[in-house]
Amino acid sequence: MTLAIVVPVKSPHRAKLRLEPILSEADRERLARVMARDVFKAVSMLMAYGRFVISDDAEILEEGRRFGLEPLVDRVGQGQSVAVQQGFAAAWERGFAAALTIPGDVPAVTAVELADFCGYRPEIEVLLAPDRERVGTNGLRLVPPHAITLRFGEDSFSLHQEEARRNNRSLAVRDVEGLRYDLDRPEDVVAFMGLPRETETLRVLKELGVAERVFATTPPPG
Image 1 (cartoon, rainbow, N blue to C red):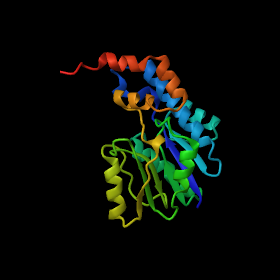
Image 2 (spheres, rainbow, N blue to C red):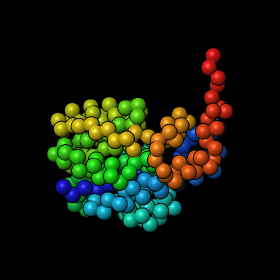
Image 3 (cartoon, one colour):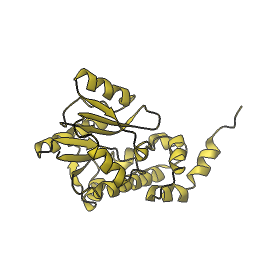
Image 4 (spheres, helix red, strand yellow):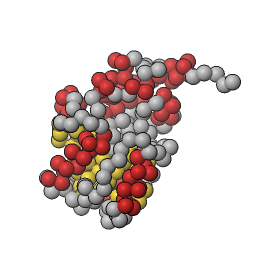
């Protein structure tokens, strides 16, 4: 099966607004770039697959290129589903029979985990990896790349399953430890920092004293 990996990355200038209570704008932008770099590093090791980054940020695209990902300009700028759809369409046009996407804010994921997810039960048309609350979708593989309508956003894990059933597509769920942790909210950051994995993202979070910041902004129990 020829497969392409597509990583959508929102411009760091607009990223991680829900971390505003604990991080300044400059710190949020720095974190977004570091997380993307950790993801690019993992994806870069899977040289048997097509590898793409799609973004409307020129620096992110250049960073992805340095890691061996082909840059695709997000010309629409209407969110994750539309960005991934553009990436999947480009993969299909280049002859890839399958496409997989992970977001640019799952810095714990490893190349070994990604390789396992890419190759897991290739006959499955819709393969999902949920976030740690099993609400969001942090990994999605489609065979073919247009097998279902993309439904990233609120409750996407359930919505993608509904799309698979509605389109009579075979469906499976694969829990991947490194894909469970996206860093959207302060509590996500705390959970991520509890993982025994060394990443550039973890180093930056420790440098910024984020754990202490979260504690300082958490109201005491009543």
